[in-house]
Length: 391
Ligand code: SF4
Ligand code: SF4
Image 1 (cartoon, protein in one colour):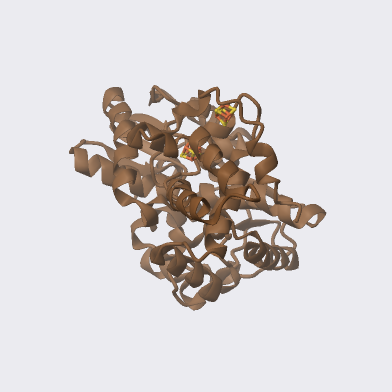
Image 2 (cartoon, rainbow, N blue to C red):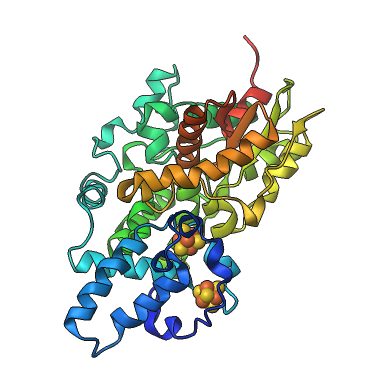
């Protein structure tokens, strides 16, 4: 299968330089077993033919523990001196754990929900657009209608009450710009991100095929999303697993909003007097190389008070919420998140924005724990505040 790599062959190329000590979970756990280079070492033992059964069993315990204590932030791969495809290796080890029946029950339950109901909550497909009623919007005229742009809402924004401002803001932005768009409604399936992160590419491919089929049926040429997980799935994973059949342009809301401001389809009508910062989501910046449209957009805001976090762009700290870590070690999520909170506190901003529902949730939680007086919002809400008509 083309999306697989020879794990053992690559593991043997590691030169143990230790550059990957920047790993956010290793920094907390401090055991060599959790160091990317330590994981590589265990992989070598586990996958080498002839490793004695007892030893393989012992190694598998610590290897699988370490592989699920990873946020898939990609900091290790980005710094790796010999360019090892570490994320692909981690995904395959997670898949190996699945084959051996070694996933924890929460992870297995999420996997089954996505497989059976096509969303991460196990809720009916008919409820995908229920949020519209809650914010007084009606998308009936746009649901499954032909258009060149589709808004891919994503599971968290569709189903989680906590995230309701995200879809409401994206729709407001699109309506303000008068760009025709469609939504898939109950034919929108999970992008497959949780399945891909768990290494389930064969199952995930059916999700990719379904979503592509639906989008093509409506003549969609571009999709926009406000979720970094969906963005990564469409931008990086789908082309990898669908090959040439994938030819739709994928945009994050920061890219589209920047473009709409640029060509004057969207106008800034309101001031933002608060001091703002932005947390680069790992899946946008390191997985997909997306960081500048947000900055270009920020520069277009008159008299904006924007301050970068000390670690930004490629060096952005992980929020701790990625890689399904919450399901495997929620204490570790808090510890990783705490470092980010220190940076946020240091900037003394009034508003923290991000472009990812998981970051949003994790940062909101961390800010509350630390008692920070800071508002944590999605970047789509910030854009909405700039362009909406005040009542
Ligand atoms: S992806 Fe991130 S958390 Fe996982 S091993 Fe690499 S640096 Fe550590
Ligand atoms: S940076 Fe790459 S080569 Fe160096 S120790 Fe880490 S995995 Fe091995």
